[in-house]
Amino acid sequence: MSKIIDAPVLVVTENEKPRRFFWFKRWVNVAKIMDEWRETGCWWEDEREKSFFRVLSLEGSIYEVYNQDKQWNLYKVYD
Image (cartoon, rainbow, N blue to C red):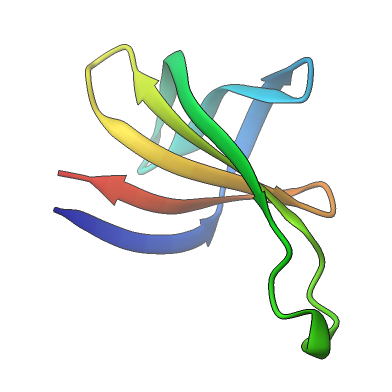
């Protein structure tokens, strides 16, 4: 089960990949990048490409974050 959040978050990166992000009044540290991909979005609405990352936190939770035009968003939280 997952929940879509799609809200801006502050992300610390290393080599353009997320290392930790600030969400729900705390830092979430990335233990592993499980998957990464790009989506073109709604090009007919001038939406830019998004770079997605599915990450595993040190606490064992799974999240999806994406970067679009240097703005990071937390897209999804898995239960």
